[in-house]
Amino acid sequence: MLRGIANSATHMFTFSLTRSQHCKPLLTLSSLWKNIKDASFLQHFSYTTDIKSKVENKRTVENLYRLAVDIKKIRRLKEWVLFQDAAYVKETANALREMGADKTAIANILERCPEAILCTPAEINSQRDLWQSVCQNEKQLVKLIEQFPESFFTVEHHENQKSNVQFFQELGLKNNIISRFFTSAPDIFYKPVEKNKHIVETLQRMYLNLGGSNANMKIWLLKLLSQNPFILLNSSTAVQENLEFLQKKDFTDSEVLQLLSRLKGFIFNLSPDTMQRSMFFSKDVFKCSDQELKELVLKCPALLYNSVLVLEERLRGLLKEGISVDQIKETPMVLELTTQIVQYRIKKLAALGYNIKNGNLENLNGTKRDFEATYCRIQAKRERPMFNPVAPLN
Image 1 (cartoon, helix red, strand yellow):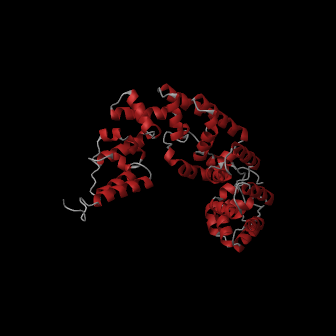
Image 2 (spheres, helix red, strand yellow; image 1 turned 180 degrees about the vertical axis):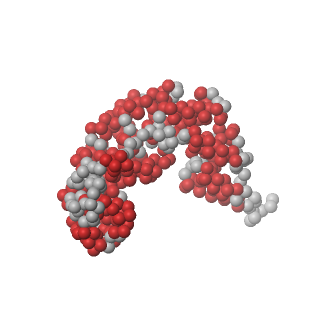
Image 3 (spheres, helix red, strand yellow; image 1 turned 135 degrees about the vertical axis):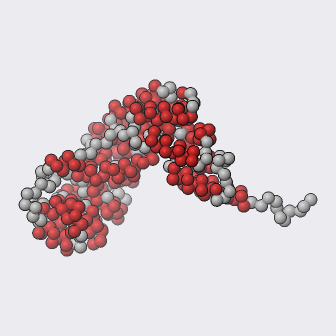
């Protein structure tokens, strides 16, 4: 394992996941991982980056050249890797080759993640065995490593990773889900397994307290974790605080459970203060009572999880298209869509002669597939002849 942590590198790459007021479920798996991957990778290694001599390891450079690796790219992005005395270029390349990676794949992996050559052969073999235990075959393993090399070569907490894999399997999560966690939410594996167990126990207890049944609890929990593994990065305190906030807003236990399920647990990435501001904004815009606001939130959880800034932008975009506040209040789910998506869909429907100002906003809602089905239905209705040309006139 690599030695020495430079203070400057530690301060630069320290990552902490906080409950930001701008955190939104629709951004989670892809955007959240994009935000944390670069920082969290370096956090789980010990690098000697403060090299006084700044002299490249000639053998390392030569071995990388032989593998057709772009040395200039490494010098530009992670030059310090080339300064390390201990490097395992040949061994790392051989390990990847044994897994089935071709020359191009090996070069791509080492260019994207040159830190890989600082892992010992024993560390790579251990990581290989662990990842293979949840992958269908070596072809899938190589594909994942090529796409997410940082996740694979983060070997600092291998024992924690191993214990967490076993825990997730015992919970009932399928291997294809666990392998997806390795690449989309690797940080959940770096924690001691006891911490993940504690969060899971908190969620189970919460589900039962809200009226959920023992018979359905496992299915609910596995679905929640599959959709949002980042929930494991929260503290049990955060879970409890947000739960109490909803209960203080007079949501019944069944309604809270409904919100948790619809929001895939992303509600725990928020804070009571954030949710309070969003709800106050919506109440002011729609001029509604507390009971009406609660009903609107149950219809459209976006009113709860989106920040005031996001809600303002989306409302402004709808009003600009000539849609009234009363229309939005009638169909609040339209606020789950970005302004760009709304504009695109309105324009597409307008091409069919459909006037959204006088029409039903429900036609804008749904996934891309849902909207395409709606569009085709309206199109077919517009093109349908007013009478049957072959039918008798009398």
